[in-house]
Image (cartoon, rainbow over all chains, first blue to last red; front, side, top):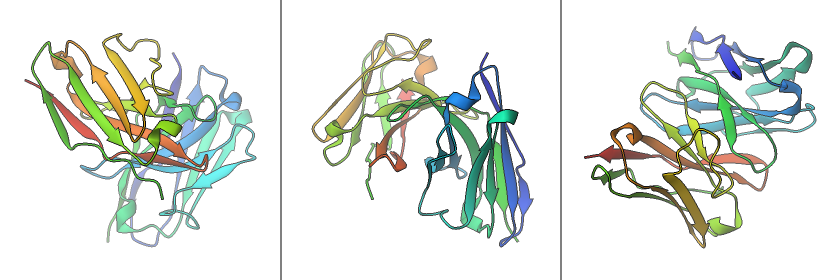
Length: 119
Length: 107
């Protein structure tokens, strides 16, 4: 079964940093574009960032641009999200999700990792 | 930035048909994807590219997209269909956009 597993969430003070990871198994990770999507407590889904299969194309939501950095290591079947200058409003469950191609839906999701930003 | 509008909640009687709408400016010119999210679980892709069902999604789930409105239709609604449903598009191929989500209640 195709699987994505996030890790790295935790509790951090405003202004702090965290690095999330997403480990892929049982699918050809290097052929999929990947995304991070988050969900604040009791709220809806918010797309955060996209990276193409070859690392050549990256997009960010306006709310995180300049503070978050998406990256991937296809040799390790892993996706990352470096989050700096964290704010209270970044508190959310963060999901990684795969994308088979442009204009497709996100077909495989991890179980999510929780990030809490609070003083 | 592009916006998608969904009703906050929709109710349907057991065995009847539920319709969840997703409004956006000329949304018919974009591909719309639908996700189902049950409490405490990750989202699941229910419909992709307007009308396509991934494997494992029941045929009771269908969708359409035209003009300014996309619609997810759930026929013969079951208790297990109770969930939050989100529509999603890619805006100008550079950003993902989700609707605010619709809570489906099966009465």
